[in-house]
Length: 113
Length: 114
Image 1: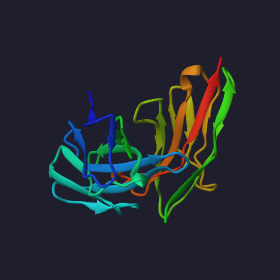
Image 2: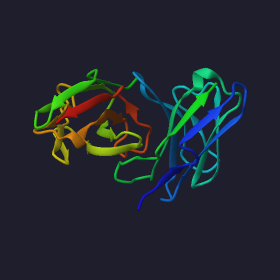
Image 3: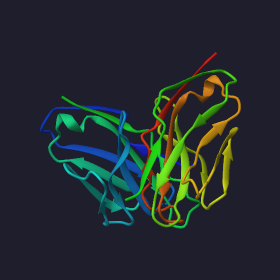
């Protein structure tokens, strides 16, 4: 069964903390994505990666960085968490030349206090 | 740039009612179009897709037709069930391979009452 997993379903962090959100896929997909989901705003792309050690900025990269050291793992890093980064974070992956479906993880609901 | 506009929610329907959720898009070239569904507490799942003009995507009784002339991809279902209660997202991908990041609409929350 196809699977994208995220390290935590719920996370509470303090302002200024460094936060790591991990995403792992078991489908040998080349492409991985991080989105954030906010009510009334839908999903917005933060960063994506087409290959190991490769990254591209999305629409809202400010305050975030990413790491892709292995093909199956794509990490989102909040260098210094702020309250406006309280959100639902969704990871997705898709294979190159695949049948179009991006597979999503269950999401991590992050609260920054 | 590319964008997707879908009808504001929430939408509340009685069981067996007809559902339409409107979606229009702006894109250069020939995007692929998608409807994703998010059930409570879960991630997004692909509901249906269409990759070229006049294609009809269908799944679980839902349908949507890719209309290039009206740049639309409206989601329809003839008879909704309580289990269809979820948030529905219209999305596009600007390359036919679908590998590029998706551009999403803001989502429409559907509540179906018995």
